[in-house]
Length: 162
Image (cartoon, rainbow, N blue to C red; front, side, top):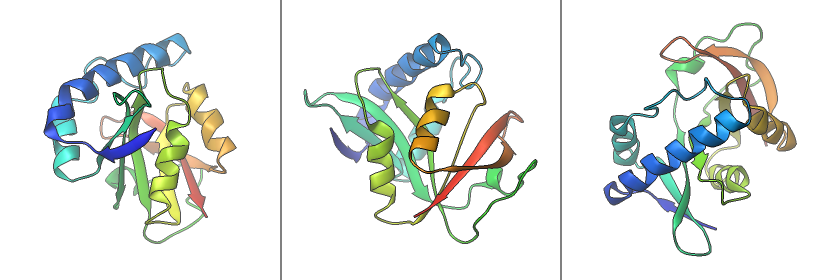
């Protein structure tokens, strides 16, 4: 696998990857995290414009995965209920991590990348996303409470300090 920053030529490929990821999530019992049309094309354009959208190429040279990673204050993380953040200070976020089903190790690749610029990472996922919840526990993340997306949907908030 090889990671690089996404560019505007990658948008159609990314939208296809998100569609495949929605199917994978639904098949594993996670039907509600990403409704049809999420993420919107405009969101991906914004992510690419910020330089925070990354693509992951498989050994075949084709794009099979993507994730958003940035050092930023995420407004959805400003309020946490049923718990609290264990750490404070500047943090990196990982969002919209997705793949087409042909990769293994995408989250580890994203975490290794983020570790090059931040020791503190926040991430969230839907309660029904058993795959991601398992991986976050595997990579040392702590459940911190519940946050709400901009649409009001609850998510389990996780953090890790390395």
